Image (cartoon, rainbow, N blue to C red):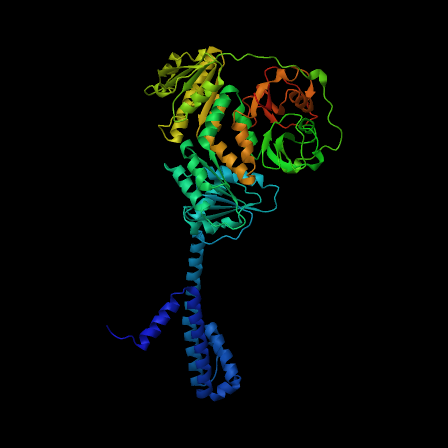
Length: 625
């Protein structure tokens, strides 16, 4: 092996210096410029002393040589001896090479920097921001909701990390979400499973972190891996809360173990199943839940009210001008929705208030609104009666739906499952209250539906076909709904329809079918995760609302609360519900059942505004049964 010479060492040093990129190249060009100027100025003093003396000796020659190096055009008017002009020519030619090289280096460096910025690999410097890890259709719903939630804030930021091109993500958000208001969206390209990539979005200074469910077959596995990565991170004293969702209930324990005590993981399947069953029991519930979770409508807020300390909860129902108390959050973190009306509010309690915006929540400064006693009616006791339900289609949620229906329906109720497959009900556990039959049928074909005698059923559940991609499954659901609506019109005997939809865009199209409820589980989960990212304490509120053992949202006949046709106000409706141990959140007008965007749902209206409800209208209440 040949020995290493000094020349090799110098060349190696030079190569290492040049490999440092644009700053090193600019430095070498600067040194070359200095060397050229000094050499030319010194040579002029020696070879053209008279011209040098006329131009300020050596300092003056340095200045003139510098000008000709940086601007070759300045030599056009030069006069003097031959050696002087020759040296100025050398300075000019050298300047041409140096300046052109400098322009090329700057252009290349600028392009490289722009390319680096497009890759989204620089670390952001934010505080109190929301981090989204991953990418799917869920991102657009979450971003739109966060933009709406942050309207009243002076400054907010949402940072997104995903394995996609930064510019593509930003363009997609601008196209799908539109006006971002005061919220800045910062996208970075990276793998949420890699700790180094996650650092690009500064998770340690974030207010909350949301793990976005990816559009992949092993979505839950990837969510659990991200939760493990976050759980293993050394957060120090300040740790943001983490929210995520899994779509298979069997993965829920592993996901919660991976996320740790600071992570809130939602069982998306369980939420969808419970909402389908609850909507089956009371038409319109899905729209109420959407309004409660959507930041554009009314949502739950938690706020301390020392002025109400020592007051029974029932009296607090009329304490706010704009807002309805729905429960209490105790000092130890326990959530009580619709507690007994004589529950005393403690000084360290937070009131759970339903309001349009937290800035609008304020205690009433005057006396409580007067109650119109003549408008309050007495509830009529109704014995549960057996029902006949038709379930069209089959997917992995169906067994759990049937299990819950068996729990809620009156004895001797019937359920007929119709699907284009072999009988899947044979493997179900025997039902005590529910008689289950199966018919092989194609829900998208009119003759098959006619053979089922649809008019003999009070309720119809249309499940999304898991054997097709979401868009195709929604298309099949739309065809089925159109057939059902046409059959209903022909029979003149209405029946309630609950339909499962995958894409919220298809829900808007499906409105023409006038089904009673559309359960868009993906959107509802996105809305719930967004609410939790803003306030992690709402997790216990949502769990309580979905738990059959606690207080739930019901849509009960208005005639049980107010005399049909009598003029009243919301304060009177609140008082009528209070006497029954319930909290009135609003009402739903049957005449506007299919009118967008509210579909007849009115939440938290002005307490003094006059209202007149018909017997078939519904009152939205928090109640235990």
